[in-house]
Image: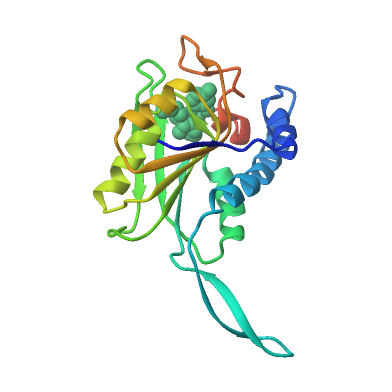
Length: 207
Ligand SMILES: O=P(O)(O)OC[C@H]1O[C@H](OP(=O)(O)OP(=O)(O)O)[C@H](O)[C@@H]1O
Ligand SMILES: O=c1cc[nH]c(=O)[nH]1
Ligand SMILES: [Mg+2]
């Protein structure tokens, strides 16, 4: 599986704000929005484009548009903080939703929402979730996408654990990962170390 760590000073500064336990909910959400801009920009670098005639006030020239506008899939709750920025960067994108909450005892994802187009064949899909910990939530989300015919999936994350990267790779799904960091690992509660805490709680408050 291809893993791209977005290694840029501006991304690192925003990630630092998100990691900092002193950042309040609003500060955390603002940093996530700005970092999402950079992650999606990088994730779309190789997106295929087609040309068409565009008429400037002076002459006709080649214009460019995305060949296959993608589907964005935020994983609720935490992925909600990424979708507005991602869709403003790609106004042609459609948006689907998956909702999932980890069971605090088993650390397994418990799905509660699935709102996706029926047929995803030929559509690139960008899954938005700041955290890839055990990988259970992301693998389950991609199971849903692949069952609808998706063959081109990008997981856009802020912090990944090596365990989650390995789980994604072992899933055998057609996925690549774009993330701002790969951290040390998971603690006994399956939280990422050093991580940034619970990305849902840090945006919206505890459930
Ligand atoms: O890789 P995993 O071990 O599955 O953990 C990652 C998941 O945990 C977080 O969501 P959470 O379950 O806390 O729900 P929330 O977004 O509502 O807080 C996060 O946003 C991922 O979806
Ligand atoms: O560190 C973690 C692990 C799972 N979910 C989070 O929000 N944070
Ligand atoms: Mg959470």
